[in-house]
Image (cartoon, rainbow, N blue to C red):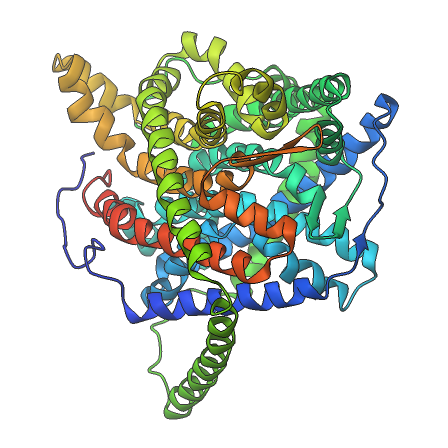
Amino acid sequence: MTFRQNFDPERSGLRSLQVVDWLVLIGIVVLIYVGVRLAVNAPETVGGRQISLDPSRLPLYALYSVLRMLGAYLLSVVFTLIYGRVAAYNPRAEKVMMPLLDVLQSVPILSFLPVVLLGLSAILPQNIAAELASVVLIFTSQAWNMTFAWYQSLTTIPKELREASAIFRLNSWLRFKNLELPFGMISLIWNSMMSWAGGWFFLMAAEIFTVGQRDFRLPGIGAYLHEASVQGDLTAIGYGLATLILVIVALDQLVWRPLIAWSDRFKLEMVESDNPPTSWFYSWLSNSWLFRYLGQRVFAPLNERFDQWLMRRFPVERESQPTSQWQIWVGRVFAAGVIILLGFGMMRAVTMLLALNGAEWGQIGLGVVATAVRVSLALLIALAWTIPVGVLIGTNPRFASVVQPIVQVAASVPATALFPVLLLFILQVPGGLNLAAVLLMLMGTQWYLLFNVIAGANAIPQDLKYTTALLGLKGWQRWRTLILPALFPYLITGAITASGGAWNASIVAEYVTFSGKVQQTIGIGAVISHATDQGNYPLLLAGTLVMVVVVVLINRLVWRPLYRQAEEIYRME
């Protein structure tokens, strides 16, 4: 088993932005413009207006929030498995889907709200629309890193495993079940944990939202913490944080640790690990008579019947037939119609942007530079500590048994909930809010890197570890030969999502309301949040579009070339 060493510059992403990138970008411009226009006509109030700070309401609020998170997570899993697989196996679709994913992960969560909320309000009762809008907004904070991780797994499956699946003539379902999903399971589970942490981070924004005088709020632990922060009630913040931590610890012990222990069976190696991850709850389930009975008598027969049904419905794939002439013309007509609609929407968006004056454009430009500096600083700090610590957790079982549960709980505690308390101390030092903004970006995005590094370190085959030990490779030589090449795909996946997450976090890091007072610093996140609060829709549109363009350019010119290198050079086979 080796690291593949061929590299194709054309596939590496070193080319400039293509036409499809600009079409995708124009489509997002039009979509955001539609959302901003809809926001003008948004209802005055959506959901309940009163959020009680009575601690007795916290269990019910916590249940509401967990159910919203679960709904968003299930939606994210479905989206991830379908979207990532199509992008990985369809080169023509990939040219559109991956740039679109780059753009979507860079659109601030608050900019999705008008489109989602008012679109649902048009066809559903207002309260149901508000609940679904909250789920969709949490989904936008969960889905992208899972999709990137799944796509990375599919594009780095060893060639010999693909050849084996072809020899056994597996149809698409059996190949997905027996090859693709097992190969990507470790990365998918670790990124699922990170997605839940990302959902907690933006839960406050998803349950309480204000545009000018319009108010959107739903009962939940995020809304509780937001209301306590606005009133400056430190006691209520303490109760809310305690409840949230209890929920996080329960999920860690009953869900995530069992899944990590279970996923160890999917590690690609020829030698069994000396110290596999363990979980008391997973061991209890495995030894449970009822659990084994249900598995053998209920789930196994159902699984077999489901496999047989899918095998009959989707036989072994045949060679693709050439596209007919009428299909080509239908595609051309559809593409022409889409381009015309995009052109019309772009003209209307430009008309709105022309309403901005030079001072506002200068504010946006200065804000982008300031936020870029903070994002870079947060990313460098995160890389400096997550790589050594993540490798230590992933390769040292004794260290992992102590530190990993702490990390999983710490990652799930939303920094936005702790931020108001930290502000009380940080604002007392010179440059306090700038320091606080970098700290909040770091607290919200470092876990993307850490979890991917741990997943990469966990996935290093045991036989390769034994080989490096037999060769006497130690220190930097071992890192250069084994650890860094094995980590590289995971590291780039984590860096892409961490970078996009840091830009998104700027919205809550650079513009904060505490005890009825607004604290803000120079940055594009502050521009977007201020425009949202004031109902300045042209400035909101311009700020969002500039952030999207900057993040997309960074992804295309920096991260995508590195992603292609990870796919082409550092594939283990």
